[in-house]
Image 1 (cartoon, rainbow, N blue to C red):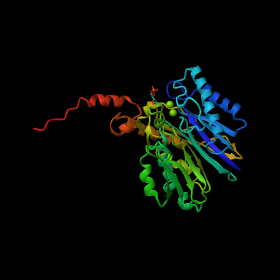
Image 2: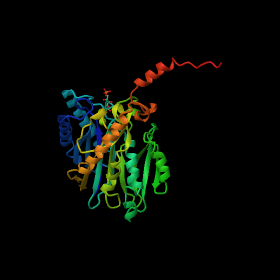
Image 3: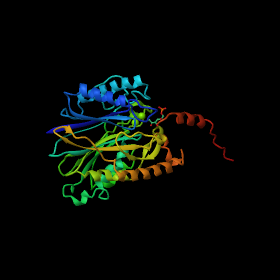
Image 4: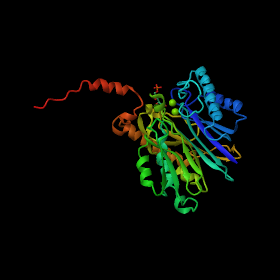
Length: 368
Ligand code: F6R
Ligand code: MG
Ligand code: MG
């Protein structure tokens, strides 16, 4: 049967700063989805990564369904009431518009969706990241879908020999969706040329060239562009189908062992290594480090299994140790050089005011 998976996530308030939502808030969102979504959805799962709550749901309404988007929006609204009652910090932070207008895209929450005909068995992974932006997935997706150094299936399997099509979005363009389609392996230099610039070019989706099936989809919203000011980093979500004509689960996870440096961390304005964490983890050191969780599911006739927590394994504890060291290394140089993001990417306006004030005091020396 055809099924749609939608993951919609938002920061609607957290305990003690931007650390994690309260249990009561999580329960309220779950309760709302259970009560109001029972006819619309086949199944759902709710979890958090850092301060963001993710609603994963399966249904048959297709991608971009007004009904599903409204349900998630209303669940986040109901949660915001609870967050306000509890006095949580940043209650309703990601709900940038006053009323729902048909599609949750562009309203604050991050969303990734895909519709497909279920295979006999259908494993997929849900990734949720906090304190970073969608470009954080560029490197792992490149390695998994274009590089046999991480995806051995690209050379060992006959089911992936035609490679994958990358759809890449220019997220700086705000008048519409500006996208390009490039094929791996022929176009890998062009893919790499774009993906190195994580703040501008972001992988939106990936398709198998073997059978045309969609393999991955990423949320591409940039909150900064919607709100015109800092309202939290974009904290992206991603769905990736695994096994068969797609990379194996372990090949999808492999690049996350690098703990690559991404934009985000404190005040969304720094550079920090992306730490793979177990489900329902909080953030801590310097409002970070940037974190990513990965939950593996199977979906059958729209019903979800319980999640297998992919980063909850002794191997990833070793990775987390390395990532902590990388985080400490870069933090030692504070705001200098690459430790803080370039001027154009700084999320707080204070520095602009300061620079404007200082700028007036500059003098050009007269030539003698
Ligand atoms: C939130 C985040 C945090 C905040 C910081 C200051 O996602 O990344 O690092 O930017 O805690 O928060 P405010 O400005 O709300 O006091
Ligand atoms: Mg936040
Ligand atoms: Mg967040």
